Amino acid sequence: MNQSLMAQIADLLSRAAEDRADLLHSGWYTTDQLADLLGVDASTLRRWRTSRPAQGPHFVSLTNRVTMYSAPDVQAWLASRRTDPAQAA
Image (cartoon, rainbow, N blue to C red; front, side, top):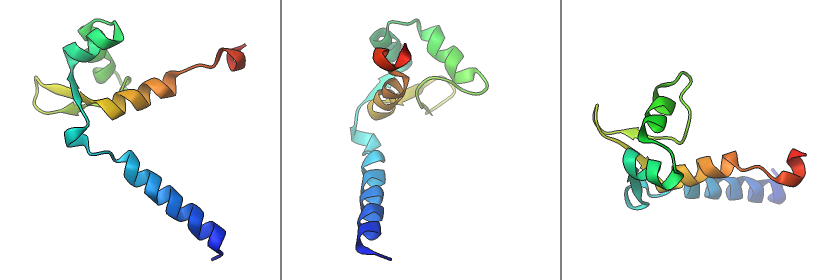
């Protein structure tokens, strides 16, 4: 394997490790907190979670009544939804 390919693989692995952020310490939102931040009703987030296929940002169900959203997952989801107006036209 050539050095360039090995460097690319090492870079990809490093980025993958960074993507698996320290979820415990990266910040969490409750459904109500995230709804306030996004300017939607909490029922919208619940509907997104229960739709098939699920929509919205990734979430963690701690119990039947407690669902949390990690800040990095919310940021990644928002970034995936961005539209560049120059490319949309």
